[in-house]
Image (cartoon, rainbow, N blue to C red):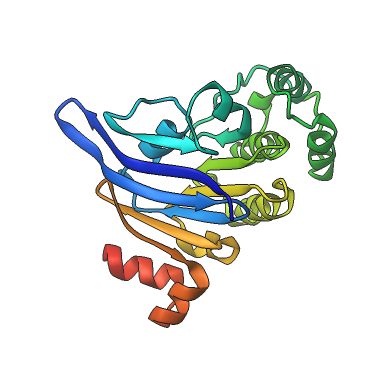
Length: 232
């Protein structure tokens, strides 16, 4: 299986404070991976480094064997924890923006998914509920033909019905052979779609495992294992 993402001895300090400590892991193609940890454990910092939005203090990130940069941004589709879209824009305008900015954006796919939602694309984002805004942003991200999708807390702050829609959209719309990283602390919601998990605590990777193997070994759900390890 192809080595899609590799983190090698990645450290990140903010001033004197270490936020990531010797992070090492490898992700292959064709997987849905949960990056799981409590809030404030370094998940978002790690994701920003993979997306070349932050520079590590030391170590390196390789995507398809190359250091992150312009080339990796073309094949990574990123959903940040906080929206970066101009909420005064209509959905139609945002689709045009994505078409102009990303060569691998499939506007027909995006419009079909939004139509399935019963969404009026002439509507401005600031006229929509938070849940609908989250759905729009997810549709845009999943409508790129990427090698790696990275979703930072996609389930945060939305109701259970919206969570189900988000998970089903992820499951049915990522490019065949691509991988998806979902960063979350809501393990019970996301567990059903995961192939692998990476547990991060206090800036360190404490476990990486195939989900089925881990459940079999521990005779527990991923959520139960997480709660035991993190004493939730």
